[in-house]
Image (tube, rainbow, N blue to C red; front, side, top):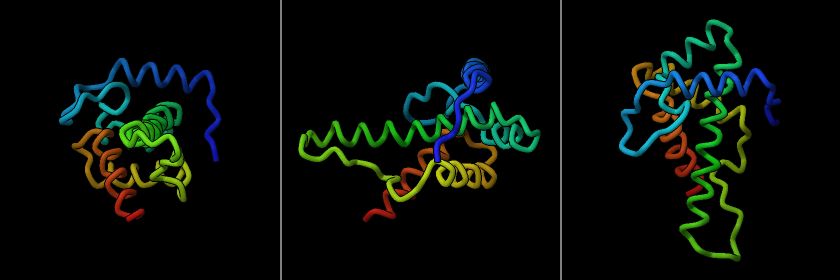
Length: 125
């Protein structure tokens, strides 16, 4: 199921990017991934769905970017089916990241995305 993108979602994404705290990750985090888990979960609790979903879309995009990177690094033109989240939809990815952030409120959303990648990789082995 895809999430309907609205004008308010784009505005929320722009706000999330512009007000994101610096990332604590080992790699360069840009955009909403630098948002703290406590802020992201706070938006959900406050029913600020545009901000919550804009940041959640960053998580889903992180998974897509990971898939693209693996496909590029493999350099195998015969295999373009790289998708570590294949059996899972966007809402399930979002739920996993949300639960991770609830358990780790001092971390950033990028930590949830990294944890999700590790979880999904274990599931395909």
